[in-house]
Every structure is written in structure tokens, then in C-alpha cells.
Length: 419
Image (cartoon, rainbow, N blue to C red; front, side, top):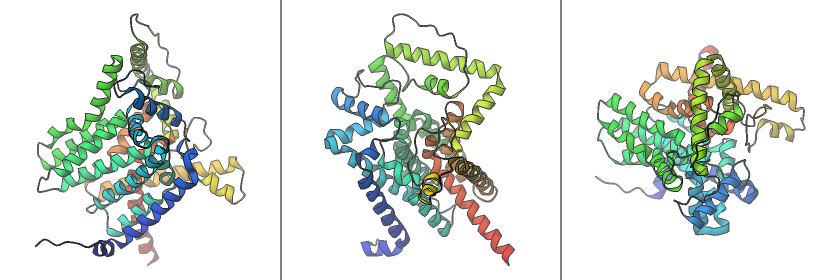
């Protein structure tokens, strides 16, 4: 028999979620109001995204006159342009509020789909961490793609878990996964393998033909490539790999040949491709340099979100970080504070790794593989190109799953020892 649930029943059933959700939303609204447009405009790439968004509204999606393109991806500036087109100069308010509320919804959906992986108490701990993690209290207020990308990946992975456990073969989770992973690829092409691999893993586990849906998850990348081809005559959503690698990696010798008869975008794409090939050849011939490069980028990627005092380790940080907290207490010896911060960061990473190992030993390998996909795929990309602490934000929520698993095992161990 069908039953209609009243708002009161829903609130009573999910009282904890409603309370922490409202508290998180209230705190986020305060941050948006207090930070204002200056917070929205902060961050290294914010002016670039803003100018490109205005150009999209002025010239259109397929125009070749969009500033910063095709060096940077078109997806996030186009997302911004839709808000600015409707709301004008106050569009930043609606972008910030949307990114905050979208993140809250995505976290709720994701945590709910971890029912078969985490206990009720573990899920409550995880949702508190994600709702009040300082970096995710601030980053959705900013003109940056990372929090939006994190939300899309949370929804995509949650939908994938629904598909994995869906015995009725319902279409809605498949549609949600395709839309979410596709939009993630629209923002950043580096996420394209995540949706493909998720469907492949599910298909293998369920012994089904669900892998046939995998190509549909890259619709966003296809759209941006089509835009680049129409606007510039190139088959690439962006041409910034050489810039990223050159600014963060070893000095790779590369004899660049400049073909004649190309427009500036085509020439830039050609140079980018040449540098990629030079990098592959160089690292193949110098594997120790590749290892050193990956270690250095890992140090930046997995280090403290404020960079830990390492030059080039971060281009962004807003939040109640260790340095800021200690500054409130009157402690200003940054050298000592950075050492403490880096030690804490190393310890936290080790805890997350142990949490992952415990999860692999005690929980469903298929589910763990799907949850870990964003961590693995995005990490590989930035270990090979440029590591920056801000690039960890899109997969940071998935790391917190393994942190919670570790804390749960540690608590159980502590109580056994205490007895």
C-alpha cells in the first residue's frame, strides 16, 4: 500500500541529517554574506573564468573570441555565464549559493548510498566531516571549479553504487550517473575515465552489458572538443598540459617546430602536443626523473591545503587552516608551524592509506573500487603533470570515507584494549 510521508515524518526520521544540514547551510550563508564578492573573486584563476564567462554571453558558445580559450577548459566559464546572463552583476551570489546547496545535496545523496558500506554511526560521522570541513565551507563561495566538480563526482559515484546494488535494473540511476560524470568531464576532461571505469567495474561484478553505457559518460568532453574544433579547428578541449608540466616539472629538452599556415590556437595545440611527446620520450629514457617528478607533485598534491610552506605547492587556500587558527592564539613562528602542519599532513595521509587497506580487507572490493576511483584517477593526472593542493578538493570527500573507516577500527581497537 502506498503511503504519503508528511514533512514532520521526514524530519523525525532524518532528524540528525536535518539538524547538521541546517547548521551547515546557515554557516555557509554567513560565509557568503561576510566574504561577499571579494571572496568570490579570490583564487588564482577567478579573473580568467570571469572574463571568459562574460565573453560567452557576448559572443556565444562556439565563438573563437573567448578569452583564455583554448588554453583553459571552456566548461566552468560557460557554467558561470548562465548565471551572469540571468542575474547580471549579482550573478556571483547565485553561483555561490548554488554551489553550496548543490554540495550539501550531493553529500547527502552520496552518504545515503554508503548504507551497505558504513554503519549508521559511521555515516553520521562522515556527513559531519563533509558538511563542516573548512575547505568545503569556503571553496563553494569562490569562482573555482573544484567544489562543483566534487559535487558532480559525489553524485556520479553515488548513482554508480545505486546501479551496482539495483536488482530491478532501474534506468534513473544510470541516467543520473551519465549526466553527472558527463558534466564533470565538461568541466575537466581529466575526470573522463572515472565514469567509464565505474560502468566497467559494475558490469564485471553484475555480469551484465552495462558497460555499453560507459561511452555516454564522456558526452561533456565530446561537447568541449566539438566546440574547440568549430572555434579553432583543433581536437582538444584545452592546450595547457605543456604549461602545467613546464611550470612544475623538470626542464625537458624539446625542439619545437612551428608549422606555417596555422592560426594561433592551432599553433598552440601543435606546440602542446609536441611537448607531450617530448615529455613521454624524456621520462621513458630517464625513469628516475619521472619518479622524482611524481614524488614532488605528490608532495604538493597531498600536502597541507595551504601548501605547507613549499613554494608552488598551492595557488589557493581559504579556510580555517592550522596557520590561521594558531594566529588567532598569538603563535606566529611560521617555520615551526609549517613543520607541525607537514607532520600532521603526513600522518593524515598515512591514516587514510591504512583506512583504505582496512576497507579492502573487510568490505566489498567492488564498492571500495568505485569509491576510490576519483582519488586514483585525478591523482595520477596531477602526479604526471602538476601537483597543487587545490586539485585534491574534488576527491577529498572520498578520502574522508577511508578516514572514517580507520577511526571506526581505531575506536573498536581502543575499547578492546581498555577492557
